[in-house]
Length: 143
Picture 1 (tube, rainbow, N blue to C red):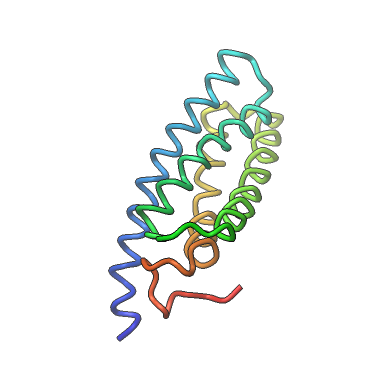
Picture 2: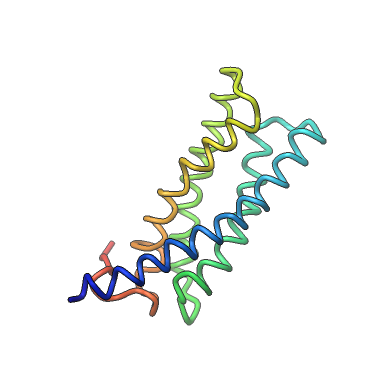
């Protein structure tokens, strides 16, 4: 029965996380192309800066809307930074690799963005905000 109740909650969280992700991607992509294409900043550097801007947006929206985290806890900020820092490092390295392989900025950015989304959702749901009131006891994992 717990799993049946979790399914609608999980579906809602996936959809809201995806919507927040679209907003994050707009922030990230806008900053990235402004830096890389207009200011001629190296793609890996532009990726780190733009990803960080998306992270700030992501923390605020996912904490408050997706996972309904309630009272602020420093631990969630640390865990969020760890999950997203790992994604940022992976995305920067991937952007560097793909740009050296001759991929267009748009194609590389699209592939890298899709690749980090799943890692971020899993990390956010089952580690960053595992304590949140938007989570059921069956979905909470100890880490």
